[in-house]
Image (cartoon, rainbow, N blue to C red):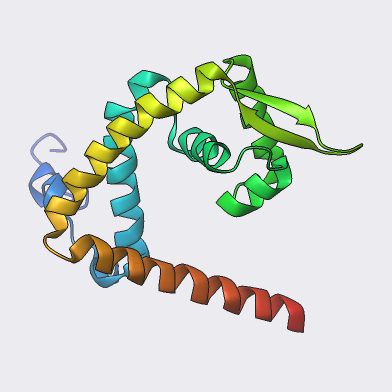
Length: 173
């Protein structure tokens, strides 16, 4: 008798009830700026890694080397703050970049170090920058005429306005 009874199909786990990967309803996320920014960041970083990752650089490391190239001798804390990298994470990253032979730490005073690229670091960032320029051009083409400049301006507005608001809230507390 039990064998003749058929269990009702559980639609929650039924393969037929599952939407395809690209068709999952996201609800309010579909119109969420934060979600769209995060998805775009993931896509851009994946594109970066597929091109520049072969050169042995991650996006944050690229940023650090580029900032040091532009302004040699900056203190570690200044670079970390400028790029929004937590100082504890930054120290580990600088250690790694130094082990790879791409940067040197020179004592700036009793408690801090100034950062300078080595010749190998100069060569590495030049190589990566050429690839990065191609990536940026491709993204610019996707955005169309004026799209890149407009997107960058809007992202700056969001970043600075929200950072200023957070700083103001922290001072009131």
